[in-house]
Length: 408
Image (cartoon, rainbow, N blue to C red; front, side):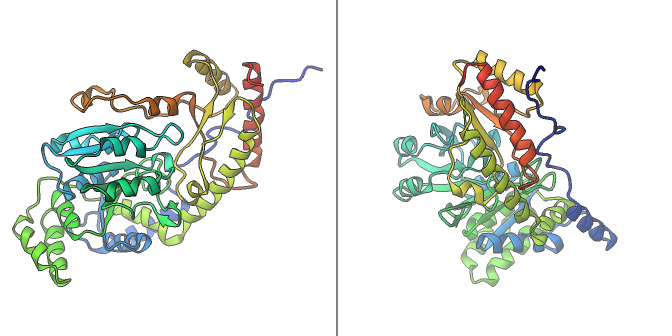
């Protein structure tokens, strides 16, 4: 009797996410049934409700919703006062929207290499490149893996630079019991696309700095929201800051307001606790998946600690031991032919992109080492034991295919 090579029998996709949940749809139906407004100019209604909930979650006094994570980043940099010619250190390994807002502001970009193990910004290269001219350092907790804040924060604190955290992949993730997004001067989030916390399109920022908050408001929330912010600061005894910006409430030309329906759906995940149920399920599945991969020759699970499993876990990036890119392509093609949802990571180094050609030159060995053999696998989110069958099948197919390619 001929034994058939293994394949994944569970229908694809194996980690579906990005469509409204039943809870989100119920909240949206209730909102529309009550004639909830389709547009809100101030920080009223569902905007106030959701912003207050996020401020409470992050224990930070100021939160502002935006229509995308990119808009949140635009607002964050503008809030920090980045102007033409200011030096900003950015990671070369991040989603492009972490960096592209700085082109509009005319900042001088300095790319920083990645840690070869985690892919996050290298604290060693950061310390090497940070100078008295550095106005802002931006970091991204890429794929939901926390940056090494114990090494980064002393570097920042020994300078005059401000810190922007891009937490678009890291909702509710903790680093040594402290929430990511609370280390820096401002933190920016996306709740768009297939983010762990999603409403299709949207973003937000949080900060403890009232001046960052008012400047961010003026950039993308003109007139009523800007006026409300000025009055709010006055009511809290911050007359100097309020007076500094009081005659600028016409704003600076952008409209970054979130759609109320997006706010309703995102708030539903938080208010119902569904987002935390998802995190719990995803954590149990990915821990099991990591254990399976550790027993397979030729592939390593992501090198993460327990902090990764406390929050979004937006990406699961393993490494296949392939001698070159051609061999890796062959392995991926065979795995996909056996119904394994696997691909190369979507993001690559930014310093090679033409749009950033004017950035400071340098060498970036860490990012290339991190990306060598790196692959994206599903962020299984059904929990255990629901995901056990499909994860076991992944293990069988990966072991078989890698053995066929000499990884024994």
